[in-house]
Image (cartoon, rainbow, N blue to C red; front, side, top):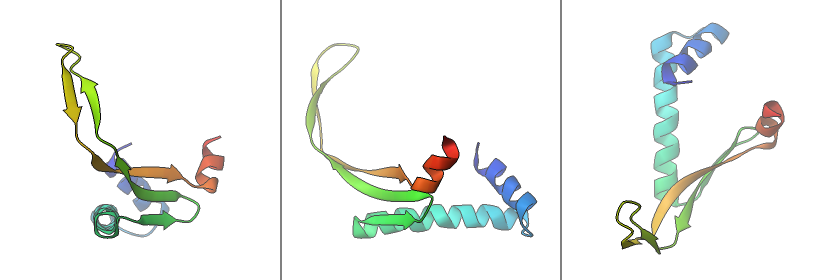
Amino acid sequence: MNKNEIAQLMVKDSSIIKSNAIKVIDTLVTVVGAELKKRQGKVTLVGFGTFKVIDKKAKVGRNPKTGAKINIPKKRVPKFVAGKELKTLVK
């Protein structure tokens, strides 16, 4: 499912127009991303899940084509952990 399909379902289930639904989705993504970047913390949507940032350590990997060792630097990556209600819905 992509952003347009989600927006279409939002239009069907509420009284908003599609362009406003797309703006809501874009704003949510922007706000969550900015909050994770700013605070290095987490954003929790009760029942849905938690977005947080984790630190991955530097490591040595291998180039799959040549087999040569390469250094992979440490980095911060976003992670999503599903909430209890979302897990129940999926079962």
